[in-house]
Length: 170
Image (cartoon, rainbow, N blue to C red; front, side, top):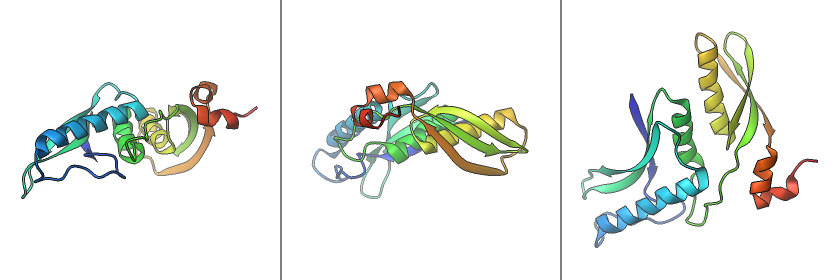
């Protein structure tokens, strides 16, 4: 089943075009498309089964436009990408440095403790992917999520990201 998460019309620390202003639809559409491009620059293209799109929302003062991440609710990568867009998307128009993909070890308790290794860009994305993977590996609900994440930067992430080069482990 398809679901979607509203990401907003512009980066969270930026003003956006307001409903009712001159040429609102044209300006808001252009701004929202620019926001989609900024998200893709920072977080990469959506995984298969997910996509960023414009949504037209009715309101008392007219229709307003927002960006949503649409995904299949049975697709863990799509869910993780939508959550990543909401939590780690661009905060302003200049916040488009790509997030490096890193390796996380995540412990998940189901009927036993599982240690899973997942590749993700953030801790929250790693948690979503690990929970989804654990559901496929074990029957039943996860009774407790042990948030013991071992962050293991991959060497290529450091090489691609100038700000991280200084901190690369020996």
